[in-house]
Image 1 (cartoon, helix red, strand yellow):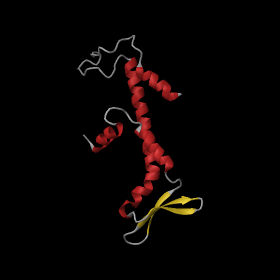
Image 2 (cartoon, rainbow, N blue to C red):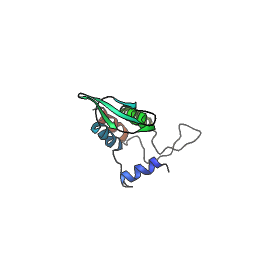
Image 3 (cartoon, rainbow, N blue to C red):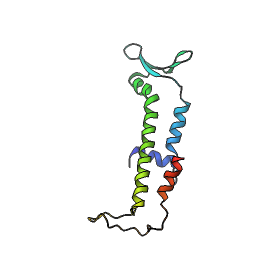
Image 4 (cartoon, rainbow, N blue to C red):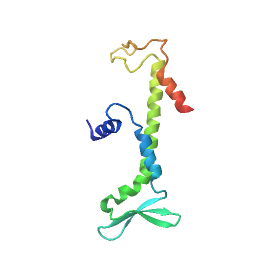
Length: 138
């Protein structure tokens, strides 16, 4: 198990799903607004600053090698969040379309793409994925 997986399990308490993206977005929203940038102040010192209506403010002093990483986090994290949400939407649409075609998470791999085994699915079962897409779109 990866460190990331273990982190998510510990965040969820081991038995539930946590809105990890929502928590990250909350931290992004609480961070200092403005353009962040790294500024080198000599050979071993780099500070991270942000433009602010009153001028530049220091976000982190003596960041050293981490200054660029910290400075770029202000724009990189929101970009990554948007990409993850977009990919999740693509996955949910694919699940819904697969269900509509008679496939679901329980289909068995076999050489005949038309054959599958899934006792939970039948043509009368409502598509749970389609409802999720409809809710997301509203």
